[in-house]
Amino acid sequence: MEQTQPDLLEELLNTARSLPADKLMEVLDFAGYLQQRRSGSARLEPGSAKALLAHAGTFRLEPGELDRLTAEIARLRELDLESHA
Image (cartoon, rainbow, N blue to C red; front, side, top):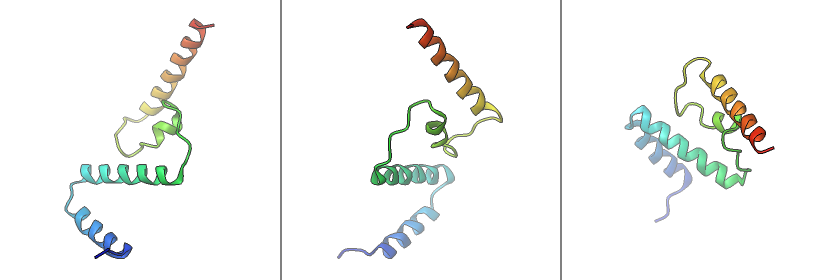
């Protein structure tokens, strides 16, 4: 017997209620992946701010750390461009 969407959502909620927070984050990450795949959205450039922000909430950063990381990525890209010019 095929389950309906409301039945599946209820089953998912019941299962999710028993999971610890870290496992719920994994479920949310996977759901986001499925949504992105389904929508056919363009792949984000690895290391870009948008790519990093797509994972916001799945890892914890210290205040200002994201800014430092994106600045370091930009600096390394510049160095790479200079060395290959």
